[in-house]
Every structure is written in C-alpha cells, then in structure tokens.
Length: 311
Ligand SMILES: [Zn+2]
Image 1 (cartoon, protein in one colour):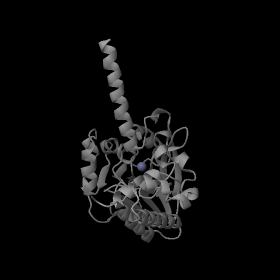
Image 2: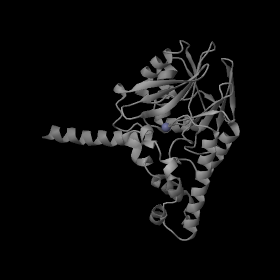
Image 3: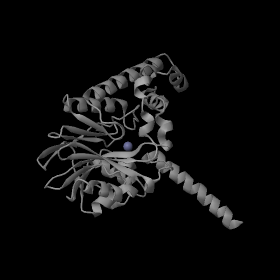
C-alpha cells in the first residue's frame, strides 16, 4: 500500500512537473517526440527552415538554417529530444557542420536543443539576458549557454550572406532577438510576432517597439518566419502592430472607465480582430497550448495586468 501511495504521489508530482514544463516550453505533455517528423522548406538558395510536425499540426519553434562553405548558422534549436531529427533533416540539404547557433528567446521550444548542438561543436551566441534566463531554468544543461555575448546588433559574414542578429526591447520575453538574412531576404523573428494573439511575457510597449524595428528591417518582399505560424510578410507585421496598439488603447480606455479585469475581458476588446487573428491558429499550436491561443482572453489579461492602476 505504501508503495502504491508513493507511486501515485510520484505520478502526481511528475504530471505537475510535465504540465509546468509544457506550459512553459510550448510542448505540452501530449507532445510525442518519437512520432514527430521534421518539415524542411527552402526559402532561398542557401537558406532553409526546419519545423516539427506532430499529428495535428506544427510544434516547437521554427528553425532557420543558413548553409554554405563556411558552415551552418542556425537560428533556434527546438526541443532537446528532437535534436537527432533536426540533424537528420539538415543532412537532407547540407553536410556542413553547425558552426553557430543563436536563439530568438529563451523558451524551451527554441533552446532545448542548445546543449546537444553545442556538444556537436556549435558556438552559441546570445544576449546577456539569454544567459541569465537559461541559467534560471533549473534543468538546463550549462553546455547550452551562450558563450559569445552581444549587446547591440551583431553581423556575421558567412556563406556569402550578411546575417544580422538584432536584440529588441522586452517583447515576448526580456531576451528577444531577431535575425535578418540580407541576401536571402528572410527575417527569423522568433515569437514576438507569430500567428494568433501574442504572448506578452515582456511588455506591451516593448513589443510594439520591437514590431516597429522589424517593420523597419523588412522590405516589401521579405519572408518573415515566426516561431509559430506560416511564412508572413511586412504587411502582416504592420497589421499585427496596429492590432496591438488598438487593443492596448481599448483596454486602457476601459481601465479609465474604472473597469476591472473581468469586465475588460467580458468587453472583448479583440472582437473586431478575431476573424483574422484566430484563423488557422489550431494547426500551429498543439493540444497542450491551444487553450491559451484559441481566443484573445489570455492576451487581454496580460495587457490588462500591465496597464492596470498600481495600488
Ligand atoms: Zn515558441
């Protein structure tokens, strides 16, 4: 009996840990890595994306791969258990070694594979906040910490490409960066712009400024690759920023009228955007996370929390 009780309490403990990890890392306890496949898309002559597919849609953050005679520059590393599949997917178009890895932000669906790729010889580049955030993740293997630190835009000339890593104000997290590949005309933007309503883990004003920087980087034909979602373009980023500004202002007005959180959510300040912003979200978030993104409520609550009167 004692053993059973211990087992079930362990099971509960494990379930709690798993769901916490899932909520954090966007994998969800349901993610079955062994069954996942990787999708490769060629975006330019020597630039590819690699994305995880589970049965119902895409999962994990999109990976960007620049390849050529100078080796591979990789943007993001998805979940740790997928590193072997990522490597195999890259082998379908390149035999070059992974020389550099840079993360768009510290969440596990973008950094989980860092230690594995570092052990294969990749040098990890990151802003100081990235090191701090990864060190704060209890189970994170220090082998995956960035060793080359940048505090302002960093340019890499390799494979005939000019890749610019650009740190942005606190947006999705306090450690967001985007990476622009000038010749390929591809912007790996991470999760501060993606399909559906944003997850504002940084600040709403920081996210608005970061989106403004992305709009400034993009040309009319730039392929904007979000962490989650289809390839989009500059107009999509502009529409996203406009939505964010308008919803922020609507929430701010409701707060000025004395409304509390429940009233603000009930007023549904995203209503006019829902038909566009909620379209197709289901295929990009797995079941463990779709609840957060299937309407605008979680986003509205985040913005409310940031704007509410401080007592
Ligand atoms: Zn993500």
